[in-house]
Length: 293
Image (cartoon, rainbow, N blue to C red):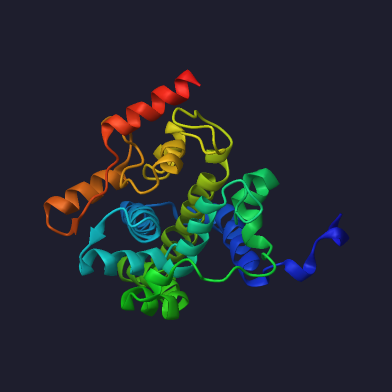
């Protein structure tokens, strides 16, 4: 079985990072907690960086840049390119290109994380093994013209290391010397990255496998409240695939969608605008049509 692996397609850098951080999280992190325990500072730093990097992916990479669901002023844009880099999910350009291709070719061979190739492929396999030939960045010409996006693309790996590893390590050292530095690196750095990445990956895998399809069965996307709780509101995936340019994923008032609430709050502060919403009549008609069908 090992000899049948397509070694020519293994993305060694990405695979080493994904596997290495996962192994550290299930080995070194428990050992650290057993030896030193955890205090409010380490827990707070983990939560703060998880919130900042998670919202930067959902609000920034996804709804702002990939789908142009709203407009944002430069402080918001700067925040999301900085802390989005710290998720180690590559640059805005690459992320948006792959995601736009996913929506255009969902459940087809051109879909980068095509669920029909299996749960493992959609979750992480597409990252471990390179697509050959590599798809071009021919669907993000609008983003290539954005100086901030272009700057982040050039420096994304340096930004990722500085914000994900150097920053929490330095803050931990200030708080509690070398033990605090190690804790900052392992907990707010390594473990936070692994948690965030796999929550993101579940949108590509689990949200195309489990859940309801109240709006359409034209593709495999599904709504899952459980996954919405884990992904800052991204779990309402059936709605998103039917109405991808809406700034909301959880369209009902009671749907758990912190990303939607953050975008709306920022609009009241004048930091976002032109929020795109699908008319309620169109949404109701889609539900009714699907129910009748």
